[in-house]
Length: 421
Image (cartoon, one colour):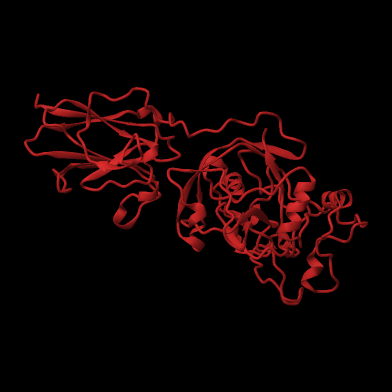
């Protein structure tokens, strides 16, 4: 048998969350491929398939192996893996053929190799390219063994009206129409989240007991935008079952605090809306039947409301024309799959996050290899998450977020969260 190097690749990455493809290249020192078949793309999604091994025939020429663990959906120019979400390693094959190992470690996420330098697994920083380590590598390095990958689950049952959201890793991203297809790896601690949007009845009870001075905008007369506001006054219970809208972000914070809670963060709302590590396109999954699932694109026509919202694509049904405005209880089909039971993250009312709006790739949303429980405080604008009755249907996406001033509006509501201790 012709002498060869037996190359074993090992990783501690959580798969398939962080990656599902492995690009392997055998090159000369100048980076050119050493042979016509020296570039392979392998399925890396199955943890049980690791470690991944292959042979390289002995050569008198110095050869390098470059391995890049990446996601198939995150390809940059000319099909190259996106460097910000790729684990990249390069090593020199030693002069004597035999077994060698190369590690693809999560602390090297987002550190691209060059011809001369690659990520050193101990420091997570670039260092000169060195010989591959002799042998088959450390057997303890297996998919999912990265120490930063997990969070403890909820330590107690969720309080009434809330659900337990077990924390973990996910890619926080922006909807492509707004900020480009950017992702940041985030780890969240476990938390509790209200199942439903804050209602008028719950808000009235908190307002009467907590000494809060500010009030939501009261429902106005006729065809004014305020005529869609749900709040009728401190002593009027007729709209108690409606979701509270027309409330600014500061008052939303005060109401959550009065309930022993806080506003959820931008990352927490994104995590639940995308079903955690699954990263679904919508809160209910990946199905595209948006109008049937969420209360979106049900704006008012000009004859119905002054300053009309004319996004009305979801109002026409086989049973007739639906009314404009938010819906009592929202839509039972707009529900997350895991954790089960969180309603209306896709529509009805867009919701306040606790954060200031920070663009993806900016100071708030740049951290390697991950951010832990991030909350952005840089910027004047607040963050709205999810679609609303006035927004276009596509805004029901789990990735939809938009900056706005912190004033209330008929399409804005909120829900509350608290740590899971």
